[in-house]
Image (cartoon, rainbow, N blue to C red):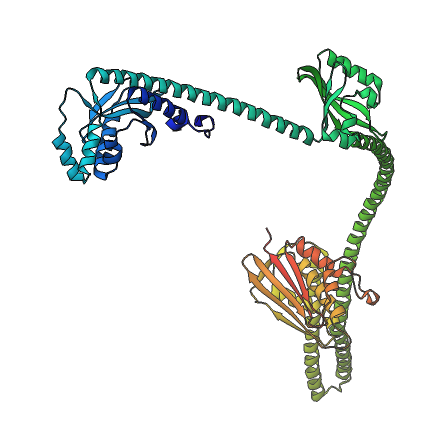
Length: 616
């Protein structure tokens, strides 16, 4: 039957044609018609006639051949099939004025077709031949042929119809049962085919997976220890041909390097146990010994008790472990050696560090002394300059006093001798007044020099904090340096408001400004150059900014980077100590709590910006 070869799909989609043998049923129904003269039709739900015998000419040649009368036939089929119950026959007189019978074919409660018998008259009814004649004329049938076909339509008794109805109901039941049985048979065949195909596919997948496994895998029959199956990795990794393995034992092949390992494994497997990652040594076909991780378990294969084993080659790992062990021992030895060397080096470093600490402490003390010496040197220059400045007015004063003394003694002699004249007295008074005036001016000048010296010297030598006027103090510092500055042609400009007052350490301020001036005199100009030094003070919200600049030769980038480094100087042969600018930096960033920046380029002079915040 077609059902045996139909493609697999849901039961609800199986058709009547797939469940019955249409050809065989057609033969049976032809014989049935020959014996009984009773026609039959088996029709599926799509209206396809699967089996047909004994259909009347009036139906096949006329009613189903004309479009309008065919509609009557189809309407008859529809009315017969609606509401039909399994095991029961339904009778219906169609619009073509003949009787039809129908019973459904059910499979597992689902209707899949109908068994039909039609085109007959009951013997109890009178055939209205005029009606059929009118039908022939209405639809254009040949009247003689149509009426002749009408005479061939069988006339059934009620008893015959009931018998036919009983037969067709039983036949429908039989066909339904046959269809259901075929459906079950189809399902069973499909299930068996599915299982068989699944087994074949699983076996194919198993063999593919078996051969694709990277490790050595095999099956050994426990009764005689012969190999039944090995994968491709067995030959690839150990060099044995598969044909030389199957049917032979490990002892015949010479696979196991250590017989005691082989016997221990066999004992465990014969006892029903299993092995997991045992280190086993095998000998390859080329004689090389290889180490593997061996796991095995007992299975049933082709009805026999066998051992399934997996051997994972760990030879490289073992070689690496041995190399790692040797490297570790060597490393430990080197570490011990390096540790001892480190201890010795550490002791030496500690000794050197102690020496460095002492050296740094000594350098620090030396630097403090040098800074103090630098301050004292500046103070010495101040003293020398002040002494020089005081010497001139005092020398003039001494000369005037001596001249006045001589004039007074002469006046006394002339007065005593009576030789004093009015004009001589007038000359003495005039000369004495001029001498006293000049003496007073020079003594006042000396007094101012001494007072300025006392103020600046005390500020530089001590650490007294007080409020001082910036411009006035800058002028006093320049006056104290007059002895050095008057030897140059430089012009000094001061830009500072007279009202600017600063609360701080004037000695530090004097030291900073003095060192900046000395730095310019020593480094910025050569020979008899006439330069300009500018000192500018501006007020900020939290203090003052002093900008000191000269138009001298400037500095290179390398010198600029080291300008504040202690002991760095480019004029050591000319008396530079390398501490001047370092002292400036330490004073500004230290007790003055400010900051200093320097900018300079060769040929463009130097500029120092000092920020002096208000002290807390």
